[in-house]
Length: 636
Ligand code: WT7
Image (cartoon, rainbow, N blue to C red; front, side):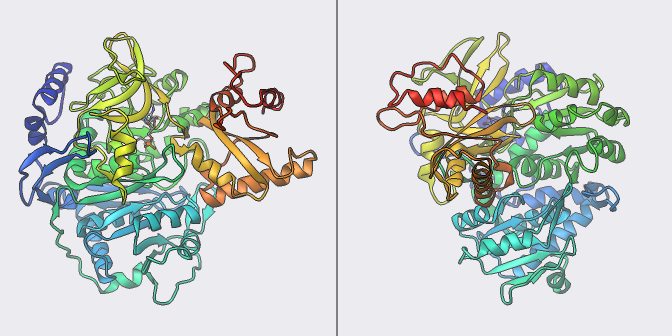
């Protein structure tokens, strides 16, 4: 076992060992960490029938000791976080490991002073600023379970998550700037909390300076609280399988589920995958553009880099503000060496004049990464040629909120990187393709359901408050395997190509939404009787959201009716979920294609949304085949 794989031979040898003797492999991978107590068993639990996994059971540790304290001897003055604000005219900020350690301890003491205890759930609804990173680590330091919600979700979505997690504490800010947009995050929280009886305390970080209302007895300013705390906060001793965080993600059923990751396995997986996939060196400047509100931000914006003692860049803004050159400007400004972003960002920048890229040297770059959805060949080549200047390996990293870290990807410069292929599995990961009946598909040049055989350290442990749901979703469909929900192809060389979801989940700009979740939101509009949502190929977003809607009073006929109905639907989605789930196309219909048993035939809706007009497949089982004609005639 090599803690850092450096050649293709080492990869093959390590892969082999990780499958033949996983216990020895993952014991060795865990050696370098600070443990309060070592484990009794490396790997435990069973996927089937219990849907259970344990890693390093019996061990105790604190992940922040491994992210911070462990580095103080060698790297106290090394930069841990470089913060680049939304507005390039505002000053950036740098925190060394020593400074970050101190700020985390202070924040942790503020949490304790406000009654947060080990095991409590703390919801974070914050802009992408250092306080978010510090607050996450502060929770981990005292053993509170952090639940970050991307600060773009609506008050209703925030309330649902707070209630599901039964959280008593919320951390937020006065406001947020994202590109040209401004979001009054504190008032979103206030609205959410009208429906959250469990919340006792809200701690507000001052960021934009906007006026906010503090509710007496419930809300406090962070800057008031921090005055009276010490800089020293001993880390709580956590059991390996204590929960570390909850992150909500969509599935094919209506309600998002709280994916739970635990302390030790997640730590080892984040560290191992980060260092190996990106081939991290001591002086790297790592920039993962994902918000900490998503798992990519958790694992590769925060935990992975800090565990490795690297420097991570935290960016508050968006790729196109104030100009489409913003990413490239930031790369040159901070000498970014590893750049990890999403295909949707690449495609949106590809569509702007190339001068925005050519104005910058980008000479510091060494490795490029892609995540969140399949990267199309055109975007891959543009990324390679114009950003990487043909000299930076690209890693197309396939993974999920549930997998904790990267599962299938090239190791930069070591294993093959081919456009539109995620590539080979990481050591410890056994991808399998299944037929619908659950039989394994052998050999190369084959396509099927992507499942993972056996456990790996970063696997989802449960869904918060409802283990049966996790079992049903991930472990019951094909006993012995973790079910990913993706379809994949193994090419002639054995490299994996991810095709996309096989369930009712759509991936919009790298964000997951269940079609049922969006339909529920649309149905909140007073205009709507019923709706059906499907994904369709979108040039920038990967998939766009296409909604078929039946209105109370039939298909709107006047322009005014049409506009009012559309506005009401969009308002409902923005209120229920957030702007990110807004439908791209709305088609009003008088009926939906249903079978005699009342099931919507989404296959037909998908085909129409994709632009297919002739080959819709079998429509003879439909209750009313005429609706198909109408849908075709009215397609957007
Ligand atoms: C779904 C997981 C953890 C990454 C951020 C998204 C799709 C993710 C790739 C990739 C093709 C990808 C899959 C997966 N996906 N990365 N490199 N190539 N598809 O996490 O929100 O949990 O979504 O994103 O469909 O199932 P997520």
